[in-house]
Amino acid sequence: MKEASGGDRTRLRVLVLGADGLIGRAVCDALQAAGHRPVRGIRHRQGSGGAGVGHVEMDFAHDTHQADWLPRLRGIDAVVNAVGIFAEHGAQTFRRIHTQTPRALFAACRAAGITRAVQISALGADEHATSRFHRSKRAGDAALHAMVPTGTVLQPSLVFGPTGASSRMLMLLSWLPLAVLPGSGRQRIQPIHVDDIAALVVRLLEDDARPRSLAAVGPQPLSLARYLSVLRHALGGGRLRVLGIPTAWLARFGRLGGHWVDREALAMLDRGNTADAAPATHWLGHPPRPPRLFLSRAEAADMRVLLAWRVWSLVGRAAVALVWLVTAALSLGVYPVAGSMALLAQVGLHGPMASAALYGGALLDLALGIATLALRGRALRLAYLAQVALILSYTAIITVALPSFWLHPFGPILKNLPMLALIGALYATERR
Image (cartoon, rainbow, N blue to C red; front, top):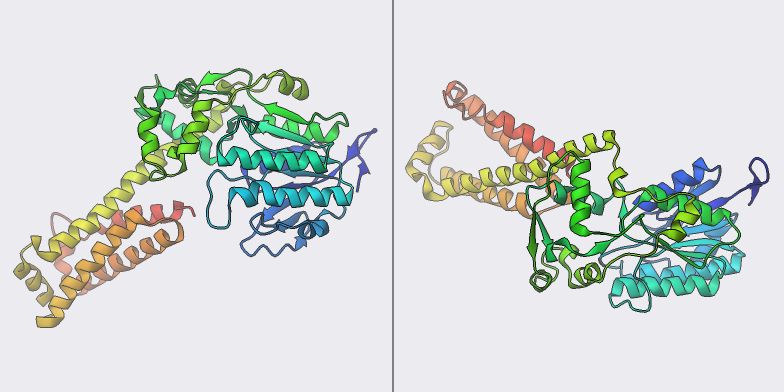
């Protein structure tokens, strides 16, 4: 319900859907700073839909009916839909996430009498859209216009936020010695900081004379290569070096490299992503933040450390995998089998038991090497734990049966310590 909040301003209780995402988090923070009460709409795997203090559980992949949303809108004055995907996965399809569920949500808003709503769409979701991403977004926008006519469709260009996955990918690309870009990075974009997006949302919810749609763009267009150059300079780097790759070449790879080289993504990039910044400037009350000011000095310093780790963690992961793969090859016959059998005899293994230990251990090493390169998330963390357990087991056996190896001048056992430290660091920072 609406409450007085100093003077004649209305304090709004706002349901922010996608509150655990980059834009949703910023919107919640901005609403709180403005004296409103955000209710965080967050996704749980089970999608139970139960409500708690300050949050509502929801799942756009399954909450596709008006009845799913009516209970969640009790006591709500306004709704912000910041849920979106750039690539489909399982039940999370463009149709469900961008069209079907928003249609059910806005129908519930109409039934509940909610007249304040902001739909976070995308610049380019218009009558000229050809990609499934843009077309599904446009259908969701149409649902807002039809069912909540006083709502606003906010259409951002490329959104920057230090914690955003796409922003970090672009910063990493800018930080590399050579940036490989489709079409030499000539595509036109107009990036906007996530804090300006959040400020626009707050102003649109507070004002009764809201526009039907608003392009949320930075102060001026620039090329993708120029944007990366600005980010590199903000991070303390020198001149950006670009290697241009024809877009058609990248498109042939389809989805082999992930959605960043997907045909539709490349087509959207080539189409450009710019608009007049005057309306956004009017609603903000000042020009949007230029890209050169996207990162503060403290953020840039933290980001340099993060980007360095991102690069060296890839190198470390490859090095760990190489250790296991080379060890497997050596055990499978590159190193004389007689020599391996002699070492196993010193720990009390002979005949079939020694052969089983040698070749079984080699296959295990091979599996761990492949797993280190191929797995991700929880599965990779389990592989790291298996590696730690195996190294500790080998070390314990050698310590008991071959203690002299600790005194070997080449330190074959002492080298297990930095190996364990590196695996531990990779395990700790591996994200789902």
